[in-house]
Length: 287
Image (cartoon, one colour):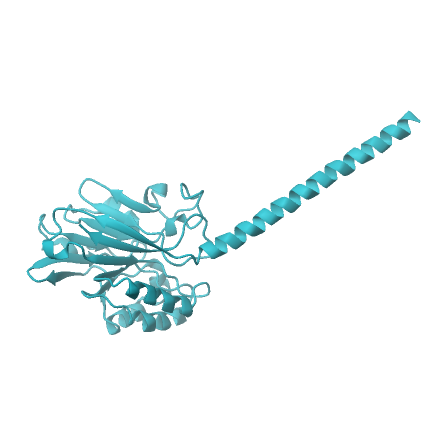
């Protein structure tokens, strides 16, 4: 009799444990689905990040000017042309004086290059649009990308540079080729820059900062890392495409002779998700 009661107790206990596990699995499944839904929505939750840049080298005519920086659009399977259209309109509403483009314009296929630049020709900036190529642009079709940038009035900054003038005041805007797929020739930007000049360098990858051999660059803008794309509440990311890990994951960095801003980018690569790492348009205001 006792053994029969004991057996029933064991069966009841096993059922209770099973029910507890089933409820736990159900709750975890619900949480997992909610996190996936949120991560998908966050990948489309574009923010505008305002960054004040203050340095004595900035000439008077450029004080208060607005420089917009975007990178890593990745137009393709996960970033539609409709979203590109909305991005262009949103940037133009900010009334930029200068626009900087950090590369990785498309994702996976060369067929996305022409539609993207057909929209980017609508970008409006008082003193011009300047950009470099990223590794994805080289992988898809660097020649076509450069051709369309030139055709659409975007100043190519891969190992090239330009003086931007307002009245008698000027700043230098230049860039280097992609760290993975091109050469980097910083002298093309800095050869005629004096220590008293203000100089901005566009580099698709922030890792180039580690090898930068000049102290004439005041601000480096870079992308490539996507801020990690999926992070631990914005504090740490398990995957950062940088040799230096979290150092160049995201945000404004200050070094001895220069500042750097690494953007989280606009689009995504696979998987098309973000977690505590919203896509952004960066607006620098010179002070």
